[in-house]
Length: 108
Image 1 (cartoon, one colour):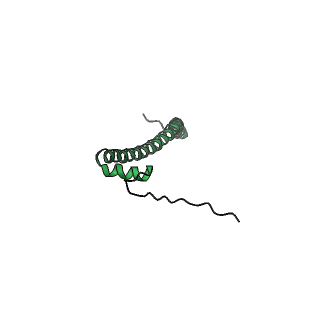
Image 2 (image 1 turned 180 degrees about the horizontal axis):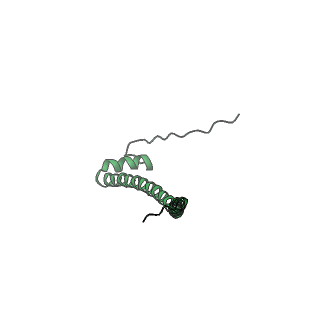
Image 3 (image 1 turned 30 degrees about the horizontal axis):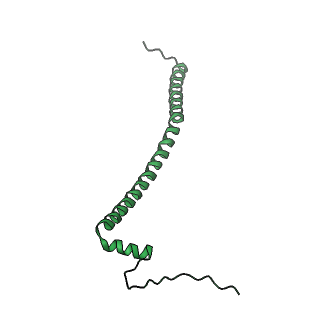
């Protein structure tokens, strides 16, 4: 027994469709409202991780250079001699050390 209710059945279907669409829209807005800050925080954290990874790589390279310098100073007497000559102004007996300095410009 199917009774044709005319416009009422069409209005009932339309009402159910609109209620379902409104429910989906409400869920979408609520989920978006809750997750947008989380997504932004996630992006900020990813940028911070990238920055820290870059800094770690720079520090690792600096550590390698310092270890190489330590090894050179520990194992190579020529490096120690060159460092003493350059930074401390040492010279071997009979050598003369000449130092150049920038003279201040004369005032006229």
